[in-house]
Length: 460
Ligand SMILES: [Zn+2]
Image (cartoon, rainbow, N blue to C red; front, top):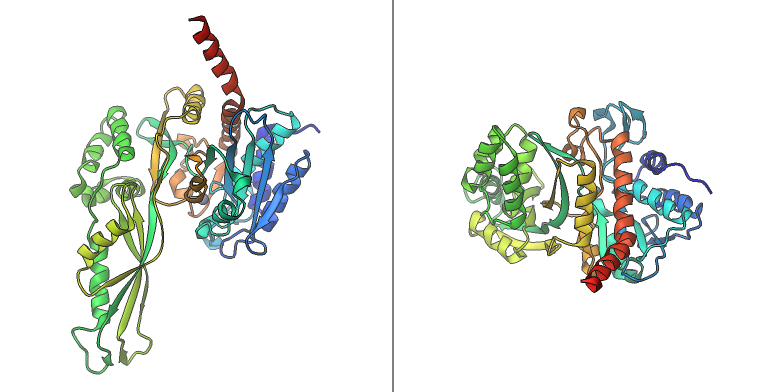
């Protein structure tokens, strides 16, 4: 069959996916997985739908290569976070095209990637592409709630179906404009998470006779300390490299900021000074382990002083740090009398060394399009499906490319889980072409390059 162009195909698929509500919880990814499955079946694939629970559907499909090299995995999650329609200019599940963008929850996180991968897989089949690796596409459920029924389920229950040397997924490959420079960050590391329950116990009592040692008062004090005390700074190469590039490329305004950022004790002040507060916050999160109190529980009756107060801490650990390191830092802040217990945790992950034929291919294909851009490996404060897909040995590169024009007023980072999430149609087209070039290079052109090198070596 004749396919539309990659760009048209990706746009159509993205729009259709945006119209399916996969808010997690509850997820209900099945309809989105079935839509992708139908598009793949059209060109001859027989995709598999795999579920850890009813309607929590993952899709896996494979384009067979010669097997000369191990497979490449491309992946996107199908679930999205909730959206409050009253805060949006276009309904969040409309997929409407407006002001040059497709609007909808998931437009950049990350139904755009699911659409791009599907379009590329369709192209591979329709052109009967001969590659030296299998290309596996996994569209997964449940990333936004911790990956248990998605990437984790696939890696633990269906490992052979997704095993790969390289994995391309969330997040990176979008245009980040700082000063006069456009950066393309590529995720190669992500922080771990360590969710902690903090418990304070004490004497209960009658509400008519307040006590200074009430657990509720202590709870308030603990929360205030946690919220106002920065955890110690632990420098990593990712942040240092980013700051070095910034320092060399950014004139004027950015220079003092960069200097301040490199001096951790001034960070709190920086956060207030920086014009882009969200950028300062992201940087801060990359310099230390972090701990945010999120859930608070104490008491049930107005006239009873309770004997137990609890809060939950969303802790995040830097590469090189462990759960125990974080607990030690928390104890130093909270002091005696607050009992800490880990609820759930997963370690940080890193792709090391960063350099690889895939990273170089990504870099080359971006620079070919934008010679002045800077392609940088980076660390993200959150977590992605990389947590689980790297457990089977895949080298992870967060690369779901979208071009954002500087003049568009769209700040990519604000689109993640924000109101009015949207993807520029032109940026999506740019992304799918770029991703397609990268996939073709790493799965095919490699042989040519290597045999050319071998020939040169023989002639030397
Ligand atoms: Zn995401």
